[in-house]
Length: 512
Ligand code: BG6
Image 1 (cartoon, rainbow, N blue to C red):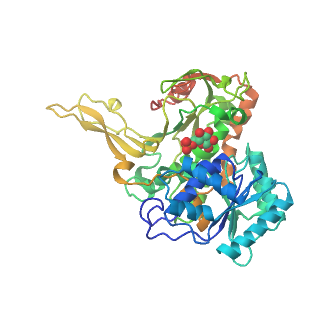
Image 2: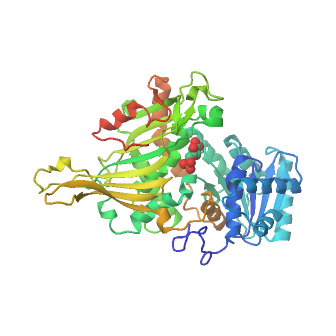
Image 3: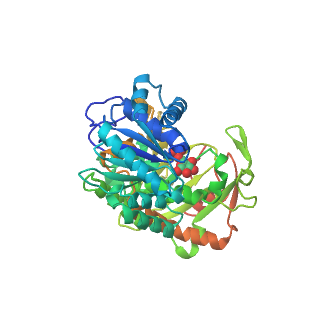
């Protein structure tokens, strides 16, 4: 992630260097992630002339396909999922460098064939021996593939060539499994070779949190417990579990969203300014913020955490069946599709400021935002307008879908008397920036290829996230579903979540 230049995928192409030449090896190349996101993102990078001439794409999968058939499938995928109209020239350029290796991921001969293909690509296309292994596989294959890469010598960096491993979420199922996975990966690759993706960090508006805070002089002086009353972080989705029932039923909203996406938003909001924009400076500050986060009391977790599950209801006018009726979901499942919690951050800046987090599926609107509520003015000189009746200032960072930021403050209603109303100053991304359509993966992939890990999760960041939610997982196991609250699909979530925040004297911003 380069700070001084324009983002790569907006129109300007000057000022950015092309990524290093490399072989981009995708394990699980016939899967959905490759078709829907990776390939369209690579296409956008090719169109922006950010791929090196020596770039080549190597698909590894189990299906019996010729290289030509693989290229045909990739062409078809781009026809369906490209984010902009494709041009034949760029399409042909990208597809002509596609190679395919068939094989089982636990079979040493697959890796021998991959090695031969990579040697050939280095000779023919000039990858310089650089190689990025992208694991677009189910999570139980992350460690086995990494181990095979180690055994076959493919993870070794020799003669100035780099080798990198990219891992998608879920990174572990709890703290113990995340630690175990980190241990296994680190037996083969060094920390500097591992790029753990959280796709929220690929979102422009998420990266903008740092710019808003640290590239402006006016926010930081008031960004603390002296001026901020509380913070609300919301990731509300209208989608239900749809076809993912079987997988989701073992995961639930907490594991799926909180230690990763929501904690990234929390860390960017709460972190101290890094000394510089170097990857480890940023990641260390984020780590400190997550490490300081905790539930108010470990012995009464359920007082500060609410879990919910949606029942049938209309979402955007369409009937959505209840969660338990979704394919692959156990009929008496107690898996949560909604979670809300109150966290405190134990440090000088945030002591006493609650951070309320909530996320859920099948809610009334899609909305990801961070709302920062400021404290009341200490005194009002306006007669008949006691300070309690004045609305407190609010800064809302809208992450998606309607990207921007709004500052809510009090203003005088025109007229002979002093009457006060809350007004809103609004910034909309689309009014200022002409952003090219993107998948959100372009920056992340470009950064992997240029060796910039700023937007990727270090092992310690991942483990810190799991450590915060571990008491919740434990308390839920003991409660055995007794605290699960129902909410109707299309609503703002369970009533218990409203009670949770009201106990602190606050209220949620409406979702819909
Ligand atoms: C994924 C979760 O990581 O993020 C999904 O597994 C969720 O359940 C998705 O729907 C949300 O991503 P976005 O970019 O649509 O907010």
